[in-house]
Length: 144
Image (cartoon, rainbow, N blue to C red; front, side):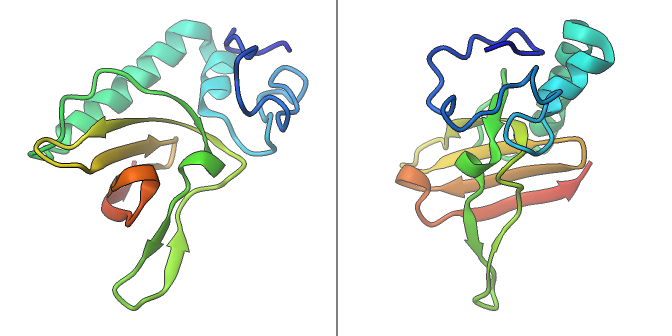
């Protein structure tokens, strides 16, 4: 399978559902892919600059018990699109299942919970959750 960003898709668990990055002009699941957009706009340098800006943005949030973020990786929305319960009791999802974001998971200091980080061109999300995404809570969701 050909990709725009030269990712090796051979071991990917999503490849059966993927329509191919190069074949779909960077929309393998039907939504946007921030990685493909960067590569199409300016190649690997553009992507690395974008990724480094996002890392800086996450670290600048100043979340006291979040480890320093040093990397991000492409993540399919359907994998990271957790359902959050608002104070009103309403349940919502904030992401597009068909889009590919940049994100990462880090363990929260002195806790059995994790932080999930996800970003695209429009939003930055940091959430906290337990094992396998249990009991997710929105920590920060903001426009970029």
